[in-house]
Length: 103
Length: 479
Image 1 (tube, rainbow over the protein chains, first blue to last red):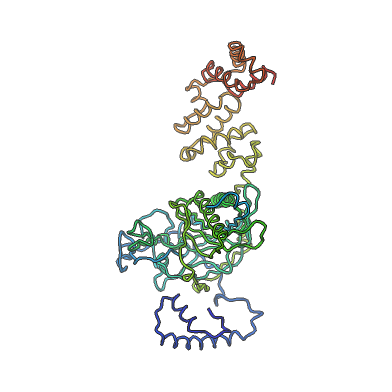
Image 2: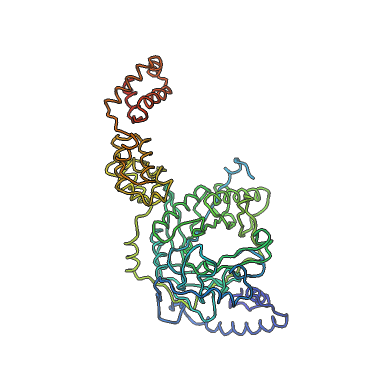
């Protein structure tokens, strides 16, 4: 993945599209590379600011430790959930052949 | 794969990643039941199915269990943040796993092995477990399967992933580490530590280097080891594979490898081209976890005694060595309280450790219902010489199976106490009955002691305390 200081390439966009399982045509790749470059240009404006005294902020809300008690609540009826699945076998979700081990 | 000779030139470097399921009632981010072995897809809801609009809410007990683990492993407990780890795989319905990335809840700790060796703990972070996939057709092997089935009951179950430093140098040390870590996890109450049920899963990072080198070699991550035994086998295989590869002029490729228990080998799981890029980013639906110093102190104050401390206490009480296998067994099975209830003196403590480690440990169900007072009485009888160890074992077996008072059971079995005067007399008779053998025993033929002991056992119909008999024999001989 390119850092913001380097210009984004069509290879970067193709890589990201692959990670997101998006199939893009050559023409789309070109178009999105241009659009993403513009977004990153904008981000570079922010990057130019002096943030030396600013703590990293993962969340805008002034909240910490939002927790719930460990008490069992109702789950969904299985029949209802499985009825919404494209394919079901032996009360499990049936999915197409998987090509590799779990990451 | 490699010779023992080659091995001495090489050093194996091992770091372990242990995933431990927490024993909470509910999942990490939703109120679905956290329970192993239930009907498939019965503990699922919009949150753990990743349905649009659902929002995770963190389980307080899971955080507390993570803090217990961190405390037990001498980690720094710190403000932390959840991240999304993005990947597409049907075991994760959201297409990302909520985990912790740059700021884990626990960091920079250590664990001491029973040998005294210290292993660094890099981090112990919270994350959610994935669903369970079953591959159909092709004999259950993923590459040959026609399709797969998914059960999401496990999806969202709380995990703590404990990452060690690369501080281990042999399969033996790796096994000792997992064994000790498991004992600690069970002691904290955070986990049941069952490798066979998958609530404890171990991945190993293995590399090799020539002895004396300080830089690490390229490592491979080994997955799919379901027991301590397979962990040891996989590490040995992998180290030998890497050594052979390098000695043949090749180079190790950093990759994930799958341990095949039946074939006894590791195999490449995916090519380098498919290397994952998880695009971690902060989970916007969860705010930071920032335990207060008071909360951290309260967790530390309530932490039960840990295995190392308990082993030391038992060893001191019983006079057994600190690395005694019997003491380790008692602590591993959490039966210290049984021993402590019976340990009135060093002698009773040492008898209690032996009886618990040998007889009680072999029947955990009976151990759970064994009456503490009855056990203590039995131990006192054996330690006081009222019962021989063989008799004590028989009585113990009976009270484990049927209950009852050990004195009454012993009487019923005809195990009457034999007073020392009687034993003295029997010893003299036995010596008088075999004068030639006695002379040879006195001349130093040690193996003849067995003959005399056997005769004493026979003469007393097994009631004699054979240890006392052996002491008497030696005293008669003069040492």
